Image (cartoon, rainbow, N blue to C red; front, side):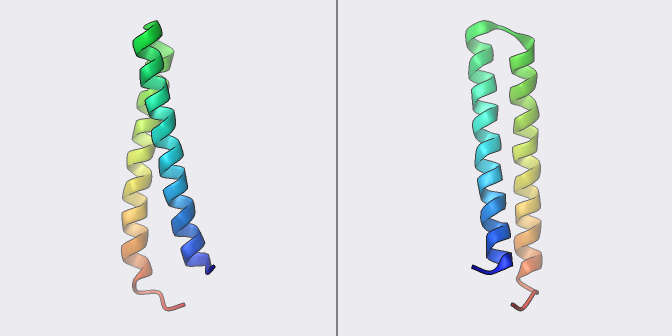
Length: 67
């Protein structure tokens, strides 16, 4: 597996983990009404969106890189 492919897989795994943490935080907030859980969920949702943007940018940039 090339370094480019590994990086892309790593970004996808990080997005999935961040989205899972966001879901966990928001569902925990619905059950307990703790503000910390909501902050946790929203923060990881933002991280998942940022990683998605980075993944799109990296994928477009990596098309120009010949490996």
